[in-house]
Image (cartoon, rainbow, N blue to C red; front, side, top):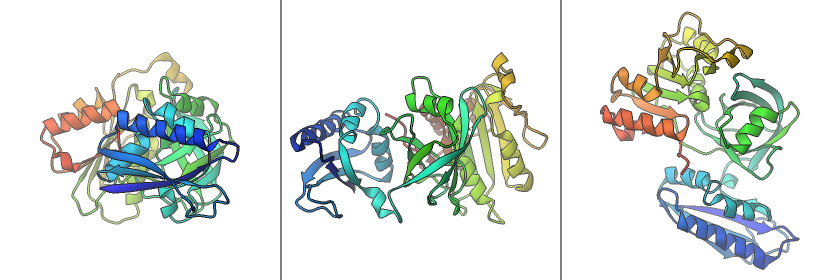
Length: 352
């Protein structure tokens, strides 16, 4: 069992009793709709803060979960319905907060400036930032991000390049129907915007001594797998990696040229593009051509779970799946049905 500790105190203009009421409402919301492997949570008011907090009396929150995967699920579930409203009510009145991020080296967040925003398809953007200070993370991890269009709303994004000592970072974002933050990022991000990033979470990885690898990426789920692949290029010898990269239309396979460049100099990497439809809609003409050059496998038509399992059961592979929750669940179920051991399958926590 793991315990996550979170210290915080209200803004000076906030009534302490009202703050307590909002905290209790959030803990009740967690208990009423618990994320996977969540045990319990509570708050304690302290006399002295574990940091220089000034005269105000701080609070210490405890969250008990079964394992590391459950901690990631808790972070994600806290900002989603039916717990979102109670969570945001607390966030609006927090003045100072300290938590698990303080265990990391350096401050609990990094600020950065958008230096480039590329609209690669109708629904997908690539955003590049220069951070004021480098953010160190392991390949495959994700971070929480706050953008100026939606202040105080933190959302999870996976860097698409390995950690850079110079502070460069890149994100791939897909606009999701009904997703206020993703839609704002894709439609409104401008160079010069200031973003805030938290310290990283997640444990998806490739064991270079653990056998060959199957990767399955749906749309911008490519980002963390791309980071892992780029990191592997540092080594002379690697396990074989077969990446299936899927989208609805051929034109939405937005990063095929980068994947081809990597595969052309790294024979351990194979890439199979997959699209649900064989032809593009009329709007695709407005965006860059993503037809892969020679060197990649021929694009396959169909949905990812069907295409991936058409090639076999993959039971001897390390399996990493990234994308929307429905795709991840369907692909995982299809692979298990084909005989893949569940303990060999990795994916980030799914939204509940």
